[in-house]
Length: 453
Image (cartoon, rainbow, N blue to C red; front, side, top):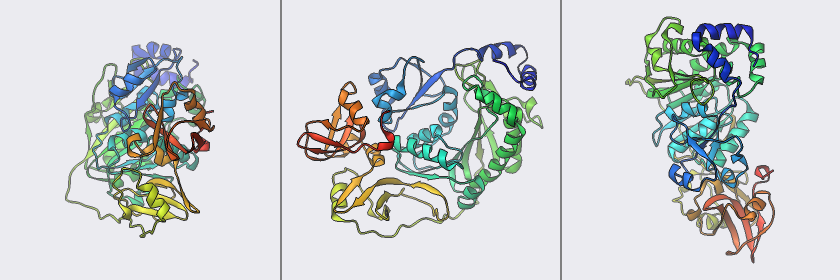
């Protein structure tokens, strides 16, 4: 691979005698990974049923390498949301952040959802996940991935960081900033990143990162934790970003991150002020590990007596039609009717504790349950993905090897045995979507935009 001259000179200076190994790594095949959705299936159970040849990713307990000849995106388990396809190094930030059940969590640059889906899995349906991306089109892809993972407790937002800060001052227990960056660590994976680097350089991203950091420190509550990551090598975007962040808020302190084989510590000599604490951060180099380039840092805000009042959202009381109540009664959930919100004919189930989001550009608030049509209720794809098979009375399960599974995912009518009515269709016990069964013939209700292509 031909590297830009200025980049090559800097890398030689940074890596010294390791530069040749780095350069050689760029001409080797990239590594492929998937991360198990532990909110749907345990790692042990997934390994038991997995049709792929998998090898563990050392720094992510639910991450695995798969062979480049395999196609996990073309398997029914992918459509059941049992895993997310993710570059192995990119698994690091969400794997190190210490999410606890009940946390309020923000992923500020979240699309397409690789890190948000893992944060959601760690929450196990508790607390609140706010996933934001400034690009509305990218935020739509983010929403689909969160729905595929069966996430009920989410807000999906598309706003710049300053607007997020205005709404959520001191609100979050955990914040993940996977910052837009110059992408030097992705040169092997995507040659287009080299051309983008030549066009944009580093300075543009430093300014963007600093603008995000300025706003995000306002959103972290006392005692909260913030993880910052990039997929680049430049000190200006990594160690020096930590210099900038620590200057913004003197109550922040860097925490020591795990050191796995092949990981490198942050370099104090690349910090502007020689800060010795940046050694607690981690650098991932593609010639040292089986993955691309990455940088990860974790900071904690000191506990103080300072607190922030939260402006909670209170939905208006709704009177649901009997057909909706009848359908919901078939689901083994302990419904809290005060969390139901009706937007025209669309019914949502809001997170247990939801802040006031008036004025935000929202793509999703909570779990979209379905649409109220004349004399009937049409349950949503997102509800199907949030359920477990045993939670809905009329469920059927087909083995992954059954040709009817792919036919169902293509939107075709299939023949199955079962009780007439709305059916939750599953593969090996994991939900895929809905169907309407009449005397052994099932009308397909799988979401058109998700169909097997």
